[in-house]
Length: 254
Image 1 (cartoon, one colour):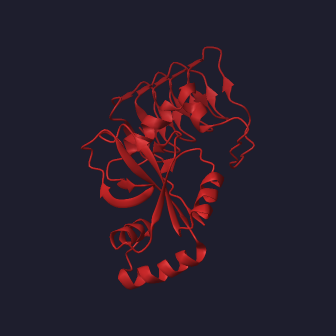
Image 2 (tube, rainbow, N blue to C red):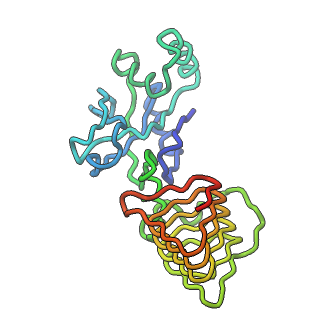
Image 3 (spheres, rainbow, N blue to C red):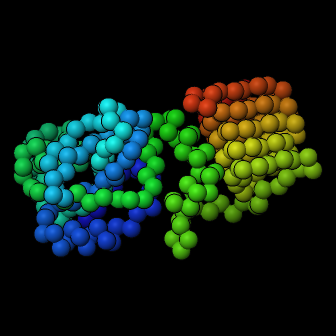
């Protein structure tokens, strides 16, 4: 069985790892990523000490080094072993999660845990700034193609909304515009969700706008993340900074 987290985004085929795990004869395996930006990303994630393909120890990545073997918290367990360990974890602490359990196993040398590297793109969504940075990074095709691969469709909920419509004076460049949007103003380097309205004369640049956001005439937005159903009135400037986006809460009126 495989247990994977929700805060690392990656396109990973688990089948080769399952085969390696089965052939190894060990009861537990972990997938990790060798990174070269551990001094600025993956902070507080588990850094691994690996010896002969087996985990020898854990530490918390505090950003001291650029290079590190970071646990992706993708665990492969033999099912019976997993059930036994769940029962064991309750005896140790009711607050134990899977990460704590695996660290306990290594510290007490209960089992040998395989360490398998992943070479593809890993996007860590650990902070608000991570989210906005990597959302806009996906506008870069060279980054996007590593996550969304040909022949590997991603199935999601459909809403049967009509295509986006554009006004006569609309201008859009390097942006994602979802179905149902009405764009009459300018949108640059932005990610625009369903049913967003950008009125004529409004400028939206370097932003992430959630579903139902309305940007009034003449409004000027930059480095903003708006949650759902936000209304931004006419002729107003809202600007954050590249490394410090402004967050507008759900349903807010500005």
